[in-house]
Length: 492
Image (tube, rainbow, N blue to C red; front, side):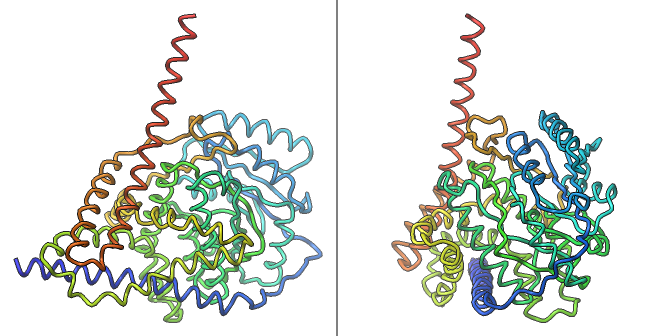
């Protein structure tokens, strides 16, 4: 029994130390951002002969937003004879008909716009992008997901940086938000995304760390894509995969925080959790795929360490879940009060400071916006079960299934057929809520200093499970109402 308790204590200490290492990484990013944010951007050159640009729009069942996207791309201010557009359509619903009409309309107006359909959705988004590159010769390629709305001057502002640096392989711009104020969920996600794009990406770019293409609102040099081996569906994070292959192959990346492309944030908790699970599995797959090559490279020690933390970021969720599960038996055994881990809690302030900095640098009303941070904290912890299972799926090498994040535009997600049903993990999150309440009670009696941390777990799993349960009931009542309406029409 003493040996078992010793093993559990060891697991607890290691988990706490590793989580502190992640928090230390956030602190490093804050320092790099503060040091590098005022550094001038690399030079850009306005070309006399603009390079050929291919705009790729990977689409899968996006009837609510596809017209807005195609209209925005058609409005791009760029020489018409140097701009080519591909709508890479893998849809299985009426989205394809909408695309066909829009492409025919703009083609008749003289736009070089193609509607590309595949027989099967092999390779998902990566497969569609790779297929499109085979059909068009261009110097640069811009990628926009269906819910993005690029501003007209996007290419005019980005392309000159490629003209000034032949080794520049990719330029990423900042994601903005079309519906940040829709509900508490979108507000919390906006806070998270702002921290990532305003602080983290700026710090990585200005600090010489490895930078990632975020899947949309970026421009690639086609030669870079080909030199790195092309798009691959080996992971669910094809953007991160190609980013690391390209940079380990010597290509430079650039992030431009002042160029903003607004996009839609998932307003439904089921859509958000599905998106996060996909990112968790895909990022962990990249850790397994590129971690060894990263440490064999000639990069600096700081670049290797921060790159590893970048690829391992979702391992925090298994660690958080493990800490919770170990707390009850170790409290009952009387072993937590003597562990000298209190000082590690100071590092926990680094991530909140990063999000605070993101709001302060972007918005005048940041004091109001930062009030949603408790919800973001709850989501970050409350997704531990779902993301842990996604991480384990990556570690076990389970096959990939790319599940899209539905978009709703101005329509209520509750009225959309794209709305997602709650999955089978809800009972597990309810159980973890009850388990965290038990841990909180034990901590209150045995180690009061631990009680606030257990209270966070109670709030987090209670928030996610309660939110999911509420959404499930809303969809259930919507379905019941529709059935009643149908029966009334039939009887009439």
